[in-house]
Image 1 (cartoon, rainbow, N blue to C red):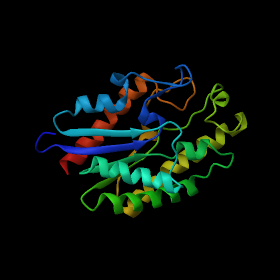
Image 2 (cartoon, rainbow, N blue to C red):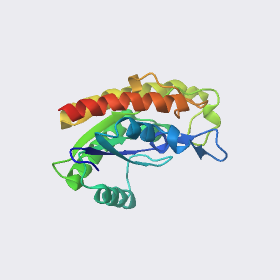
Image 3 (spheres, rainbow, N blue to C red):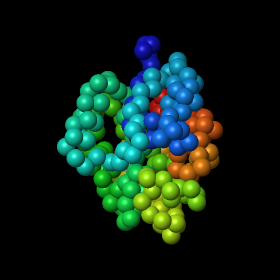
Image 4 (cartoon, rainbow, N blue to C red):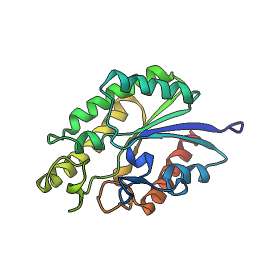
Length: 214
């Protein structure tokens, strides 16, 4: 890392991983087409981009999950920014999606990361891309409900973005609302398309540039 550069770790789910729902048994976009790679190339002189994305990841609840996050932070330290984009799977994987409960879990997550990463690491809370399910969404294993749940998931996703923004203000963290970005999605309405990854990278570059100027 060059002198003066900053480092950010993005911790997220399948949209951080670069999941391609059209791939056989669930694939992955080529490295060059993932938003994390595009972002690194665009900010090569100012930011080092690290990422840890996993399909199906929700906010942690088990000892193993907390231990894993602790190990990731230790591996990537020193960090200027720890960024998290989680919550979509917490809503889609249940027949009782609850944005308020998910935001409460995120509050615990913020506390844990701050304790592990230390006061020199800033926390960036990212509200996930909007949930806009399609007819094909309901045949996928990562969507628990039937078609009648489409409106519920969308509404809870909108509430989640609002709760996250309130949480960021309360906890005095950085905040970015990806649900308001005009992103392209794959056929399932959940995962970013290749165009969506490119657009996400452009939007996130603006976010990091502003952070770097502070």
